[in-house]
Length: 369
Image 1 (cartoon, rainbow, N blue to C red):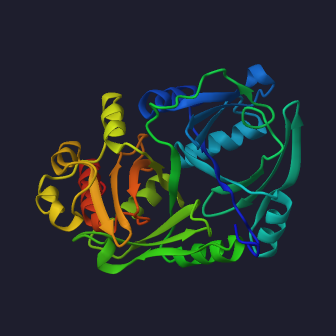
Image 2: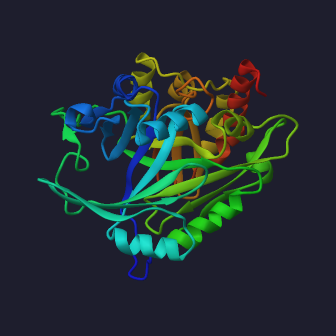
């Protein structure tokens, strides 16, 4: 962490979702994604307005929250969010070493403050939080948890579940992708530069990121350590509706499109998740006919990549393996990526066309292309 970093971050603290039924969503992520429910907050713990389940896999942490009392202030906000957007991400929470300093810098740099810094205590210590707005209805909660030893945050109770060690499907959050309106990508890229001191990591425009029918533009901003990476997409002109246009229509505006999960064994993860009923995007066999010529040798043999429909890409630093799920709710909005990196810090540029064509096939099936 650079000494002159005005907005240092330790990493992703949690990805928080507003959902229609948190109990059922928690079961879905446990059964399909191999996550463990480690903490809970709800009426039984003295919080009557909503129910929250904390799901973990390695350092990856999801918080799933739904309304219990729809007429309460918090319940109404949750119900309205789900009505407007469907199940979706409300918060990309960041762990920072000093919430007060981070909040002061962010708001002075033009960020809209949502919650001023406050301390919350229980018998396990103290957590400091604050919150700032980002694109759409998404927020960044800033979390300082060095003085806390509890399950998640004060008000939550540990479930007593043991965290799986060797058999988890993924170990960390690799990156979180946001979709914004046409003409807004650079505005939000500049926001992350100005407010958080993030820098551009990658940029994808033009033919890099287009098919015959649809196109988009994308830039990736990241903190100095590259622990937190936020690709930002906007639609571009095409013959038909792009995947970004479809997302914006069905989500009801800008929001988090997909979350990439870092795995050490993509083959084992894909097999286990498919067995549990998770659906992945299909890749035509023709993709693999020339794959070996430009990707070269990878840890996973070409025949196994073909069998499991896993994509591969190589750059100057190494290679990566990746695969994408279909949307995990009825609206064609939020989906997931599994990524196994071997040196490469890229995002699968060589696979963009194959990925977008796979998404377009699904759009056509839904009647949205």
